[in-house]
Length: 331
Image (tube, rainbow, N blue to C red; front, side):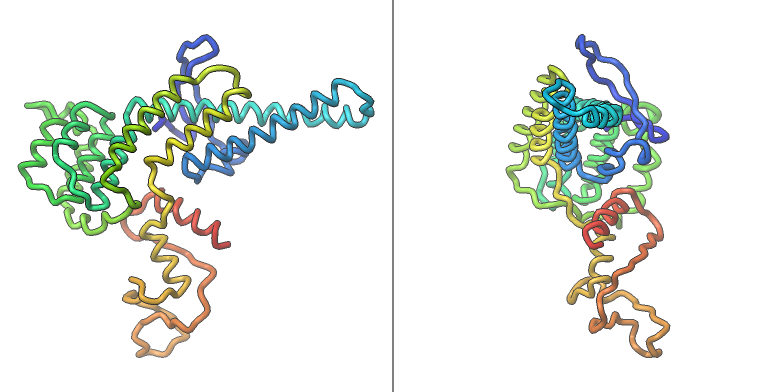
């Protein structure tokens, strides 16, 4: 959603005078404790963690103010309060930066109308019948180049659309007589790759359950998100908590559940020795088992606790992070 290069995220947010300014922040897992703890979380969960951290900071700030105000506090207590002040201010500054990052992300979500793309893509992935007119509307009017091309790819992989229909969609994203302009131009190589490997359609069955009423929920979520983004005002300490809490709730309306992706499901089935799962057809290699064992996983064994996953071929950070989240729960 935001521009990032070499772990430096760039974003635009309004300052105290309401003027939109360019800002940047280095996402350092060592220096930025909040980022280190929440980097792999879904957006609503990261917002919830931010709110909890903010409550702690504000409470400590209040305690220090109370001690500094006199009232019989000893010199030792005052000195201890003063010693903790620099770290407290630094943490508050970090949280303020992440509040700006959250706000910029929400602004991007609203501007690009991400909920509409997300809900339509999930319906496609789940196998719902999506009228071509809905796809045309998004390709023609909303989102940026990445959103449009991603939707086109998902539609192509999940519907088995005819060459004629796909050509009509391509015409929307590529101006007549030009192969170097339009949203599709920047992703031409990727699009050609997808078209040449239509067998990937078999592996596009990921996501969570969405009903046919999803677009209505999506429209409501999008409207509320826009309202939240427009209503950002006031001081950091006073406004951040309520705004971010509401934002997290709205994100949950269109984000898929944090379910296990394919690689994680396979790793879980193998390590837990679950019966009647797809890994039963996998080849099991163990030098301690005599030849002729058939290469089947011995289900009577104790479940595995140490797992190393190698991905040969296409992999992505989505799967990697999904595995990391799974590992945290099972350690």
